Image (cartoon, rainbow, N blue to C red; front, side, top):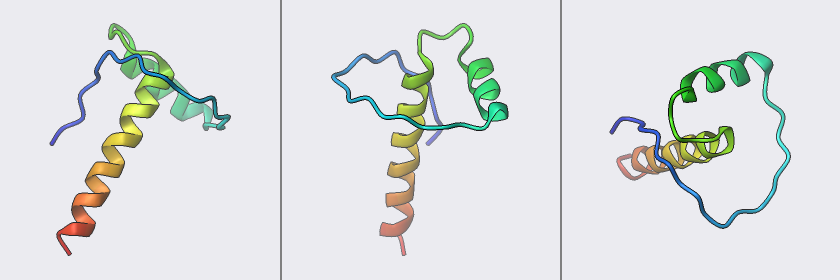
Length: 60
């Protein structure tokens, strides 16, 4: 399964998180031209990571 950016607006809760500057720059470059915010990208990336992590755990 590949990671695809999706436009998504949902009810949310604020959290504060620090990112390395290099990672912020890479994310901002990745979302240019897509209808997705920085937060939206992070949420989708975390969701993708969790789903794939769960698949690996279930396959053991």
